[in-house]
Length: 497
Image (cartoon, rainbow, N blue to C red; front, side):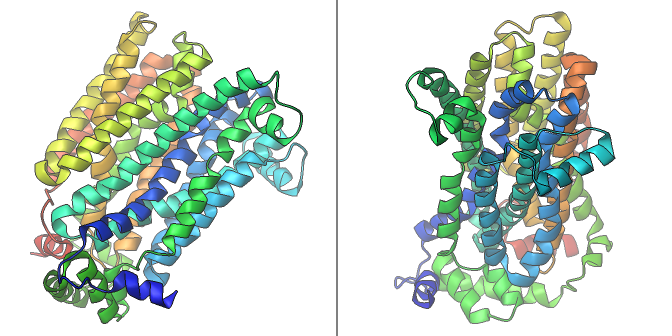
């Protein structure tokens, strides 16, 4: 292992940095985004079957979907402190182990009551006056605990990529994380659709036992089980990546940090970056209270509100409940899941465009255009339901436009900005606050969608989300800075001076 670490961190003989090495390291970190997208999106295909099989109330449906997001909040809350103390790599390994657990535990949730399903039901009964079937209680447990891994990775992967990347390509490499999320969502939509079609054709010839139970009788279990393989791959690949050079410098391991930077950008660039990193760290107090100093309050406001806006525009009403919405609009389940596959493709394609252009066009132009587009699109979706025109082709077309706008703006750019604007010494804890805000907005949407659809209808639900657009646009136009092409230390100097 020591030799492998040395090989990974030794500068290349040519004296120039290795773009391929940098890309591969960032791709490994971004692989957590694939798992993020898969584990949060897989429920969209399973929840309809779970609702019918276990007669879920609107509340239990929302809790089953949202349990993973509540776990994310806990993961984000501990990720910053863990990563600042133990390092980015070790904490990412913890998240990878939780990804493996989530896939296995969700697929194998017990059919009979046990002590941990009883604990969950006790909490549900005490807090909300409802109990769940053992399968649902076990699934809620699995999704909560696995969600902690998603929360850790959602904060740490873009942070790690930001800290190892040269400024000229940092934006697109951080955007790889959002691209990976869209790939994970697309994979889960495809696997859900294929497994549902397979279950319909395999029932006649597949024998009794594990495979029939997993892929026919309770195909929702198979949907979760698919996530085991990428989770194990992520865990193994993480063993080969280096630690963040900025974190190493903060810990006093300057030689190791400079070797990693030299491998990434070449010795000359590494020496310059090391000088900037040392100077920046020397002027940082490292206290979380620093976020409330006069030079930090605006950054904190951006770090909290921008991720929050990105969620309450309603993106997860489409990602998690898209099939439910299209069933309300008159589609059958197979058609609804097929529509989700189209959405996954659009999401991935337009995120690719953002990855390609974000370091050339800048953060602000993409963000402002996308905010305007998402607000208009989701308002028009509400109008279609209000006018009774939701059964035609306009609803999926507007959803495609909405996802395209989100995918070139909110999706990747939020991760980039919150990865860039905070000082090195407290970047982990500061990003925890930002991503905590993101998951709070995500929970508010995902927990309330079933109730909103049932009690106020799709039209008003979409209009509520659309109200976010003008507020987010004015906020971004007035306060969010452009950061393209600058080192993290130059961005810090801009705020200080």
